[in-house]
Length: 424
Ligand code: EPZ
Image (tube, rainbow, N blue to C red; front, side, top):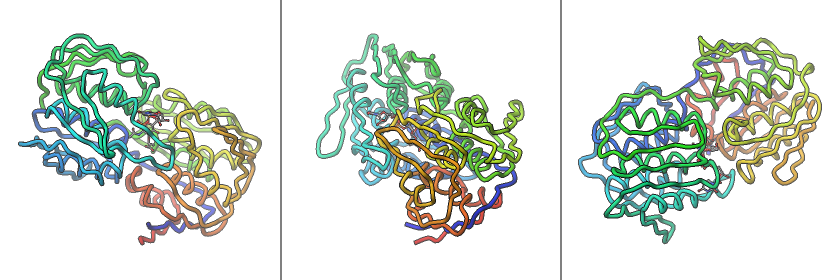
């Protein structure tokens, strides 16, 4: 695994253009399996996880081409619905191809996704939901096989015990082609990426309503046409850059943002006293220089959307360590998403962990250190800390960051960061 060598402290300054949303592109690519025509997707970010999903679609028999952020997916003559283990083990979101492959092909087998550094990440809600849709689902030897019943009909009512993003997307997508069925999903996730998925499916002729609310209703249809669709901007990438510019006492313009997707972040940034301007019509956030000494800590409960997003928790923790006073972050989405804490402490952060709660004693000045990246968002948090740290830091295992951020080195260098990437 390679490393970043980062010299700090640097005050970031300039403009950054946000890419398409990774967590919208991935479920939409899985849902493209349902189409009986060709699918063209615009504003798709060129990053590791998208490349993995392209490999999965190619292994299923689709012909996928990708350039200039436009993904063209040509229908497979013959669908292979056994997804190789090594692809699923690379990325958990690939599990979401199980339902669409099964509903199209009658049967499919996908490896159980591995855990990762932010927790065990089971798929029990997915399996439970597919069974409630009427599918036979069995697990053996680390694989899950699903079979479509001969007859699918009538109304199905499913209540999710947790508003799981992936489960909502998986069941909504699978139900789309269950002709003769009306599926009601209750207590679903409310994330903007769910609305994007509904709009994508409906652009192919699906009949889905309710995304963005707690109840989604899907009228199963026989067939879906091809489509030409554009992915929404990545709210987590946008939040990462906004936090990075503020933490470095820099200035900047973050462009191609949908501000309403970041209300929870903006509320907390205001609470700690930062200044920034939201230009809704322009879809931009402008950040003047903020002085860390004038900011103070706050408390954050990490919750499903529209709450403060877990995918910005590590980055916000890196920032709150720099502002004066105490902050408390309670991580309510993942059981143990705190692997970045020990690494931030090597750079001088003062953080205590009690169960799923992080108590931050702020007002530190980061000093450089060698640290380890453990997942996409932890890598981003360490990058922010290293840019603010006095001296030359090394972030090992940095490849995680390329899974979730497009052109991350170029974008940060354009803002003035001093980053050298050593491939190993
Ligand atoms: C999606 O993961 C995102 N990934 C994650 O982003 C994000 O952190 C997460 O939603 C929460 O917002 C994609 O969209 C590709 P969940 P997902 O199902 O769908 C538990 C990133 O960095 N759970 O809402 O896996 C689970 O363990 C990634 O971009 C079960 O117990 O999230 C977690 O504690 C990281 N059983 C909670 O629910 C299940 O069957 C929320 O998970 C499914 C989930």
